[in-house]
Length: 275
Image 1 (cartoon, helix red, strand yellow):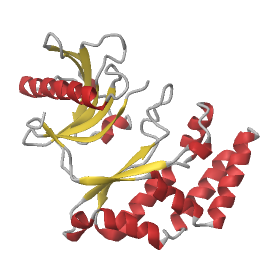
Image 2 (tube, one colour; image 1 turned 180 degrees about the horizontal axis):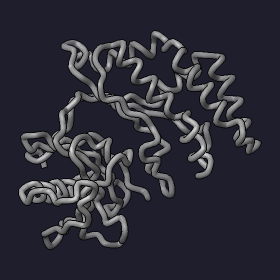
Image 3 (cartoon, rainbow, N blue to C red; image 1 turned 90 degrees about the vertical axis):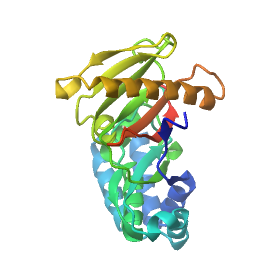
Image 4 (cartoon, rainbow, N blue to C red; image 1 turned 180 degrees about the vertical axis):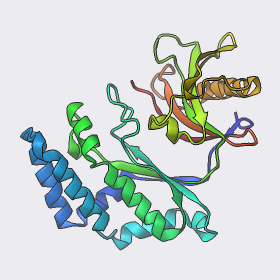
C-alpha cells in the first residue's frame, strides 16, 4: 500500500473551531436562532433569505484571534514558503444513510498565504448555511444544532486524473468482491460536484480483473495501463477498509483520490460510505 498511494501534507481542523467562530458574534447567534425557529415552524418561504443574510454576516464577521492562531498555527510549514493550498469541507452532515450531500459544501483550491487561508476556511464554514444545504438537511431530518463543519487543509497536488473510489458495488451492496472506481481528467472535485459524467469501473479484488461500466462525458475509455493502475488503487481501497472499519470489516469506505502526471496516487479524503 505504501508503494501505491500517499497523502498530501496537511491537517484537519476540528468542529470546535467552527463552533468558536459562530459563538464569537451575538449577531450570528441571533441569525441562527431565527433560522432555527423558521425551520421548526416550517416557514419555508423565509428560509432562503435568512440563510443568505447569515452567509453575508459570516463573511463580514472577523475570525477571533484565538481561532485564527489555531488555523494558521496548524500549518506553519505550508504557509512559510507560499505553497498553494487546498481547503476542503468535511462536515458531520454528509455521507450519512440516505443523505450524501455530494457537492453542496464548498472547497477552495487556490489558496496562498495566511489571509487567503482564513478567508477560505470561513467560506467553507459559510457553505454549511447555504439555502440549498439547509433545505436538503431539513428534508432529511438533520437538525441544525447537530451540524458542524470540519475543514481539511492540504498542500495542492496537480492532478491528471481524479475521482472517487467506493469499496463495494453501490448498486449491489452485498457484492463484496467488487470495488467501484469513478474518475475524470483533473481534480476529484469535478466528479464530486457533478460537473462531468465520470468514467466508471468495477474491479474484482477477490478473483482479480475489472470491467468498464461507463466511459462518461469523454466518450472513450482510459488507456489500458491507466485502467491497470486503477485496479491497484482498488486493492489499496480494500486494504484501507480492513484498517479503518473498526466495528464491521464489511463497512465500505468512500475515498477521494487523484493521480499525478507521473502516475502517483494521492488520497485526499477517506470517509465511511453509508448510502
